[in-house]
Length: 496
Length: 118
Image (cartoon, rainbow over all chains, first blue to last red; front, side, top):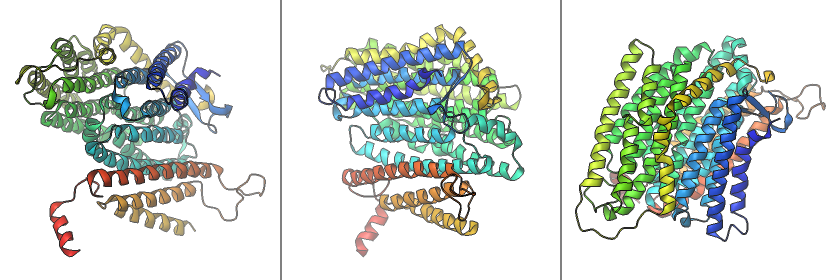
């Protein structure tokens, strides 16, 4: 058995535990070094896994060597390795950025960061629905504490909503799992996929009830339309490095939707008859709600939070098409949108630090001390979010548009996506011109951006031109990943 | 027995939903606790309800499904930890925001009425 597969879960756990032990618990510098190098090792690990998943067929890892439907299995395929890689890059940027001062607010910042990574990586790797629940809880309890890291009224208020909503979500998730187990007798994703075809009508009805609950749970995680209200406050009040890392959290919801509906249950008739239409319309409406939020935002951080919602809407709507082309487009756009919004969260903080009292609010403020660095970064990020060439957003949106089949679906999706792009262009250019050009007051010596923050920012900002530079091989790779996802669904766990 | 368990789960869930929709963190917390009780019973029931079946293999001919028991154990532990976190967070919110309303501020009209009555 290939033990590399479980390392993305074990390694962050080890790093998190080490940061709480001597000598790291007393020495902030050592702790930072451990945390950043731990994330760097994770990048290498996930890169290895990407290579492995490309060269070899999908692999199952049986925990404790228990045979497939009985033991818990981890599944490494191209989609999960891609998500791992994305997470580790974000983690590197977040831990680097936090090392420049944000982690001084509490002794356990780095430990929590790595516990969160453990949960996220576990959720991406697992092939067992109950195990998915467990890893959801691991990442959630770490995210509760990270969200409130630094303290203050706004954070506490956002955290109360976030925690209560997610606790209700967890309860619904458990109801759904019990229903699935009661109906099909298995919680292993691959096993469930093969058993769905043989279920009786009563069992199928139970399964549909479970699926409806799962939709709510994953929709809550992904911030889909009626369940997105928590996101704006939570993300905009979180400290910047945490918010950048949280950019992947909504994608965990989307990934789970993809796994369950586009892979496990892809052959079940009810998915096409009502699950996908529900996802399609809520996805489109989520775009509308996100764009309205972006236009109404009073500061850059709020704007970045609502941009997350816009990207969730475009991704979920495309997911509901259920074709390999749509999965390919989804994977590429997911990479782009996660990195771009994470970069915007960091950028918002850097800009806020140099504008004195005005912060990142969209009002006249002090002149920014480093307009070239921050201005260029802002232009790159904004253009790539809007979807202007030559940046990755352009290619991402092009793929999304091409994945929609001709007919009424095309009419709806094209008008919503392109309309949202125009409005985002207006909102972001307004924000940029206010932040950088509407200067008032005297020049006061501002704190320049440190080396760690610059490198964290550049890591995320440069991802966008890189994604478009290597778009050819990357889209081909995403296509192979999408084909593989469809192929795996038809295998039973014994076939590995 | 199925009917009894179903009614218990239903009543627990109803009370939980009612309490979660209250605006005070304490009531919400009680509601979430109740919801997790309902969930735990529900998971138990998912393996099928049996009377007098053994919990251990080979002890009796007829034995209960062991998986829901393992699931329920995990769910209890996680639910307990999460509730504990929420208790601490609620206390913190009470201290930070000055009241125990989930939105962090009391609706104005309600506040004056309560002030008059108490």
